[in-house]
Image (cartoon, rainbow, N blue to C red):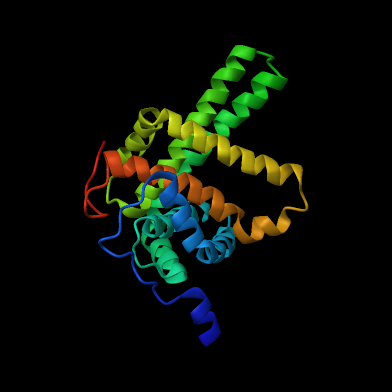
Length: 231
C-alpha cells in the first residue's frame, strides 16, 4: 500500500517563488506541462479507470479538469486524492450537465452524418458542422467551471457558450490542435494504443483546460476559486 500511496499522492513540490516573474501564454503552458508531465500520465490512467462505467464520463472529465486547473494555477496538487475528492463532490452536477451536453453534441454529429449521407445538403451539413464545433468549444469551459466554480448549471452553460464567441481565435486554434491529435491517433492505430493509455486523454484535456483557464481568468475567475462568477 505504501508504494501505491506514493504513486497516487506525491509529495507537494516547491511552489514557484513569489518574486519570480509571472509566466503567461505558451511559456506558462510548457512550464506546467513539462513540470507536471508524469502527473498527467498518472491522471490519464486514473481518468480511463473512472470512465469505465461510461455514465461516469462527465464526472471524470470534471475531476480531471479540477486537477489540471490547480496545476495551471500553481496550487499544491495530490493527483489521485484531489481527483477522487472532486469526483465525489461534483458527481451530481457533472452528471446532470452531461445529460444535457453530450446528447446535444451527439445531435450535431448525427446532423452532419445525416445531411452529408442522406439528405445531401451541403448548406445544412456546414451548419451542423459549425454547431458541432461550437458545442465542442463550449465543453472546453463547461467542465472546468463545474470543477472550480460554485455557480448554477444555468449560469455555467451560459458562460460556456458566451466564452465560445468571446475568445473565437483561441478557441478555434485549440479545437484544431485537439482534432489533429485525435486524427493522428486514428490514422496510426493500433500503434498509438500506448499513447492513448499513457498521455492522450490528459494531453488533449490539458490543452483545452489551459485554453479555458486563460478565458476564465480574464472574464470569470476571481481571487477565490469558488466565487459566484458570471460573464
